[in-house]
Length: 231
Image (cartoon, rainbow, N blue to C red; front, top):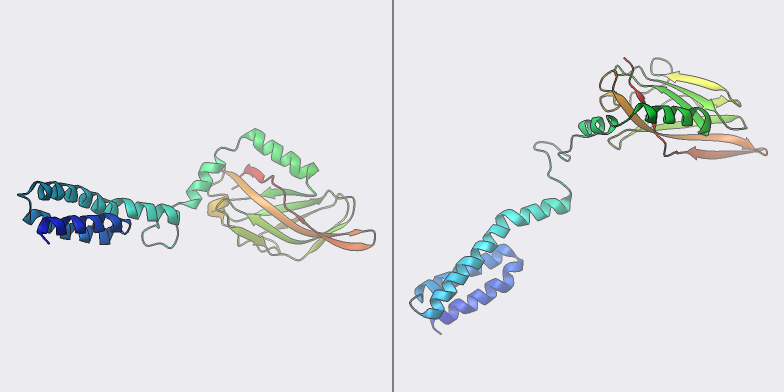
């Protein structure tokens, strides 16, 4: 079997195995060796040129395009020295909240004051001195058992407190400086600076007596708490 024939055999094998670029590239190298030795023949010269072209494309795919495809499938480029994605979530939250208008804030305040099952009037500050006032808008007495806040980076900030009861229309205020533990609220995400806008999701677990039966509810509205950060 002459060198040109061997070159074409390895070229075909290389073309087929190019679905695994490193293996295909090795076969292209072997094919090129045989084509170089038979380059004085027309078939050998053509084979040498084709092998160089396809081999180069396979190499480029292995070194450039394949890694990019893998990174894309994995969902992002990991940050150097870090354990997460390169996205700066705090920066992303700032970009999101800067779009909040005064009309948005008024609409949010109106909803939480009158329409929400459990009204919430918050004061979020850049120095962690957060205050939350709750109002019972239900036609029955309710007991507030759990409160969870959802921050702009997708994290959850549970509020630790003693469950409390609210009569119809009654309000109660809890604060970070009082008996409530609000240490899970990351102020760098909610209120990096006084005057910034905040956007915080809320979920409240509560019970109320319906026809003599204590019934549990989870209030999880799509409307977020919107406002301006205090000092």
